[in-house]
Each structure stands twice: as C-alpha cells, then as structure tokens.
Image (cartoon, rainbow, N blue to C red; front, side, top):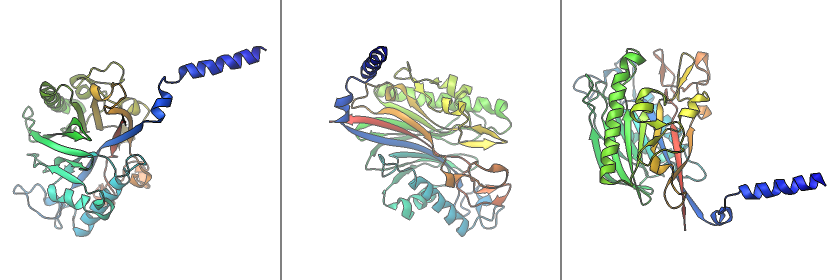
Length: 349
C-alpha cells in the first residue's frame, strides 16, 4: 500500500512540474534563428595591393609563399566549414555570421560564392579598417532572414596604435530589430596584463555603441560578438561590459555571457600550451534573454562548433583547431579558432 501511495505521489509531482501551457506550446509553430561568429585567420588574397606593404607576407614571393592553390584551398575550407553550420531547424545556416581577419571584400565574395554556400544566396557588409596588419571585421548575412537597415563603423581612438574598427549593423531579424556589433579587439601582444587596458578601451567603445542604440530604440536587442582576445571572466567582459555568468536577473539593457560556464567546463575556441581560451564570444543583451518566451526572439542555446574535421590530428596539437600554418609550415587547415553560434527561438501563431 505504501508503494502505491508513493507511486501516486510521484506521478502528481511530475504532472505539477510540467509547464502550464505545455500542450498549447506543442501546437504552436516555433521559429529558430542562428547567429554565429568565425575568425577566418588571415584570409588574404595573393595580390600585393596594400600601399604600406602590410600584405606582402601573403603573396607568392612572401614569407608564406601564399599562392593561388593555397588561397583556393583556404577559401574552400572556410566555405565547407560554414556549410556545416546548418541544422535541422536552420537548414540554410545562420541568419548572421560575424567574421574577422579578412583582407578585403573580394575574399568574402570568394567564400560565399563557393558551391557549398552559393545556394544560400548570402550577402555581406564590409568596411576597410585602419588596422596596422590590414585585416578587417565584416558581417555575412542571409537576406531571407535578416534585412540590413543601417551600418556604422567606430574607430578605437583610445589606444596608441591602429586596430580594427567596430562594425555595428542594425537590421530586422524576421521582423524584430536587432543590432550586431562585430569586434576583433586588440591582441595580447606583450602579455595579457600589459595589453589588458587596450581591450578594456575596446569594451568601453562597444558598451557606448550599445547605449547609444538604446537611447534611440530601448527595445532593440543588442549582440556584441567577436574575437575579443579575452575570456568571459576577464575585466573587459565581466566588468566593463558587465556581461553576467548567469542569465537570471540580467537587466534588459545588461548583458549575458553564455560562454563563461562553458569555459569553466574546459570548452574553448583556441588553445595555447595546453590551455584553452574562449575568445570567440557572442554576448547577448538581457532583452533577448529574459523575455516572455512568446513572439519575441529568446536565446536558448550556445555552441562551440568544434567539428572533428576542424581539429588537428597530428603532433602536439591533437584536438586543437587545425590552422592554415603552424611554425611556418603549411597545414592546409581552416583557422586557429573554432567558430561559435547562439540560437534564438520564438513562437508564431
């Protein structure tokens, strides 16, 4: 008899724990949208077209003997990688892909024109940055899901050298206005501690851009993404941006960082001397996280896209991202960073 009572109690507790609208939600149509970021690791063409000679390393006569065959393999590899971003709920891949370390607009066009991606009919937004190395950030998007309304580029003037501009793209994600700020923050050259102020200044600029967007449209969702050259718990992300480890309680105009707990578990996007870092972050404003779960886009998942084909299988870098070059030797890989992606959903009638 006690066993029967216990069983009945367990069933009642299970039923009580179900969402009240579980049956109703089963009959509602769910839309899913992916937003990704990928560092292309020095995607240069083979043509010496920089007046300051910043691209000579990536030419046939340069240090890396960068020729047409290597370039075409790199472009094909990146397109193949992106084609694998597709899921059952996002069969045409992410709506938006932020990218970094590209030389110019033509290399983006070469990537999205590859057979693996041509069917998606992707477009892009590009801007030439003043970066001393000659690399830019850009945004690839699928016009079936995302309509660009406005693009602004913001120069980081608070540091003593030229770096990448921050690209802010405002648009409509299937009818809902969002802004994506694409970044590639200053590197850790000279050491993490010495270079940290540069990334704090970069975070201040991203935060200022977000605040200016909200002054115009308080309901706009804001996403800060990029190779930040810092981890989620570092000062630039955790303090300057104020990106929280937990989603609960994040204010509408605050930020949630879904990568913090992931790195705690040993998951990263790049590795150096057996230490994983998670620099490739997509940080989400609270009004895209703590919503009512109805018709507004709501964050529900984040993934490091560490596909097996993106991993090195030889030497002391087994399991690390398979890069294009290592110690001066050509590997014919993809990138020294794994891509990342976040997913949003909403219910439609």
